[in-house]
Amino acid sequence: MPSNNCTPRHDLHNKIGLLYTLLSVSAIAGASLSASVNSAWIWLHYLTKPTATALLVFWILLIRAPISMHYRNAIAFGLAFAVGGDFFLMLPQDYFLAGLFCFLLTHCAYIYALCCDSIYIPDIKNHYFSLKFIIIRTVFIIFAVFIIFVVIALLIVIGLWNNLPDSMKIPVAIYATILALMAGLAVNRAIIYPFKSPTLPAQHAANTAALGSIFFAISDSMLAYGRFYFETPLSPLLVLGTYYIAQWCFASSVRRSDQ
Image (tube, rainbow, N blue to C red):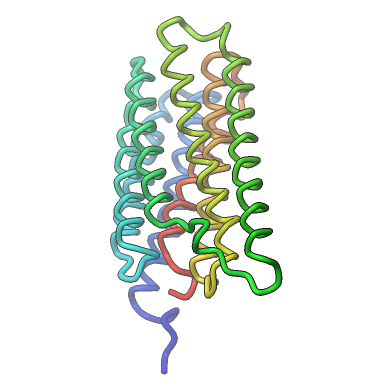
C-alpha cells in the first residue's frame, strides 16, 4: 500500500513549501538590497513579504487531517492577521501601530489555538512516578516557564522604555505581555504533551509550535530594538529570517507528523 508521503497532495505541500522558501528569501533580499545597494529593490520586498505569509494560509487549509480543526482554523486566522501586519510594516509611511495591532491579533489567535488543543493536568499519565509527584513537578515547570518569558519581556521593554515615544509605551508593553503569554503557552504545551499517551504525532507538532514561538519572540525583539534603539545592516536578515522560520513552524504544527 503506498505511503501517504507519495500522494499528490503531499507533493503539492512540498512544492508550496519550496515556494514559501523562495518568497521568504526574496523578501529578505529585497529589504537588504534596498537598504544597502539601491532603494529601487524595495519592489521585491513589497511583492514577496506578505505573499509568503499568505501562502501559508493556503498551505494549511489544504491539510485534511490536522491536529484538530479548531487548532488549524485558529492558526489560519493568526496567519491572515499577520498578512495585514506584514503589509502595514513594509509601507514607507509610518503604520507601525497598525502593524503592531495586527500582530497582536495574530498572537491572540495563536493563544486560542494553543489553548483549544492543549493538555491539562488531569490528562497526565505516567506509570513510573506517582501521579502526585508528576502533577507537582508539572505545575512547577509551567510556572517556571511563564516566569522566564515574563522576565525576558520585562527586560526587553525596560531596555527600550526610554527610547520609546510616549504614544508607543503602553502598546509595546501590552504587545510584549501577549507575546510572552503566547510563547509560554506554546513551550508549556510541548513540555506537558509527553505525559499523555499515545502522543508521538501530536508531540512533534507541539514541539514545532514551541520552536516557532521562540523564533517569534526573537524576531519581534530584534524588530523593536532595530526600530527604537539601534539598527544594523543585518537587521533585515535577522528580523525577517527568524520571522519566516517562526511562521513556518506554526503552520507546520497544524500537521501531524504521521501525515
